[in-house]
Image (cartoon, rainbow, N blue to C red; front, top):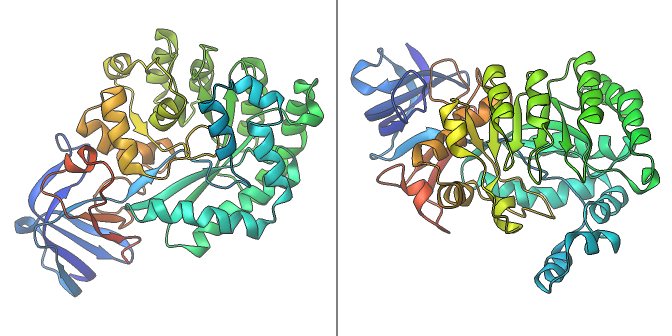
Length: 401
C-alpha cells in the first residue's frame, strides 16, 4: 500500500474513544496518504506499506495536534493598563465607567485596518502553533457593528492563509452592547438578528454563532432570539454561560443542541442535565478563572457524573485571559479545577474537536481523519500537563506536512 510518509518507532496517545484512557500504544506507527491518516496503531499490525518517506521518531510520543476551541485572538489595542489599575484596586465597573473594558477594545478594533488586525493576531497564533496547535477557533465580538464584525471575521479567516493551521470562525456579535445602543440593548439584538447574522451567513464568514448570556451581557430571551436566527441561517450555536451567575444559559443552549457551553462556574443540575441530553460539550476556561482571581470552580463532579464531555481552551483575549499557551492551560485546569491528566489531554484534542463540530475530522489518531500530529520529547503524557514554562514539542504536522 503506497503512502506519502510514515512515522515509526513512536509511542502513540491516540485519544481514540474505542480505546481505554488516552489510547496509548507503545510500539506505534502512523501512516499518511493525501493529508489523511491511513493507519495509526501498533507497528506489528500495520498493513504492508510503501512510504515515500519514513521518519524514525526515536521513541517519542505522538498525540493528535492540539485544538484551542475558544479564543478571541483577533482584536485591536491592548488592556495592560487596565491590568495595572485592577492591581491597584480598581473594580471592573470602575474601569468600564471610565471607558475601559470591552468598549475600549471595541474602539481600537473599529479603528484598526483588517491588515492591522491580522498582523497583531499572528504573534498570538504563532505562540499556539509553537506548542503543537493545529486547529484554533477565533471569535469576533469586538467590533459590535456589522462592518467591524465582518472585518474581524475576515481577519480571522486570513490567519489560516498566512499560517499552516485550520481556523474556525465564530460570530459573537452578542458579546456586549455597543455605546450607541447603551440604553437600547433590545434594539442592538434586533440589529444582530435583522442585519448582522443574515449578512455574515450570506458571506460565509462564520462557522457558528455565540452569545454572552450574563447579567453584564444578554438575557436568556435575547440570546434565544439570536439562536433562533442562527438556526434559521443554518449556523450551529455556542454560548458563554454561567460564568458570573446562573442565568440558565447552558440549558437554553442545550435546547438548541449547542456545540458547547463555555465557562460554567455557576452551572446547576438542571443545566447539566440538559447539556448531557443534548450532547453539548462543557468548555472550561481556567485562564479567565485565574486572571480574574475567581473562587467558584465549575462543578467538575457534576460534569463527570453526567458524562458531559469536557474541553479546555485558552479563552485568549485582551481583558480577562491574555493567554496563548495550551500547555499552561492544561496545567491550570489540573491545578485549579482538579482535572485529571487524561481529562486535560482529551480536553485539548478529542473533546475540543467535538466542541467545534469537527469530531469526524480531527482530535484523534484514527484512520480517515486529517493527519494533524504533535510529536513530543517526553517520557510520558503526564509531562505535558505537569511542566510549567517548558515546551517539549519536537515537531508538528498539519495535514500530513
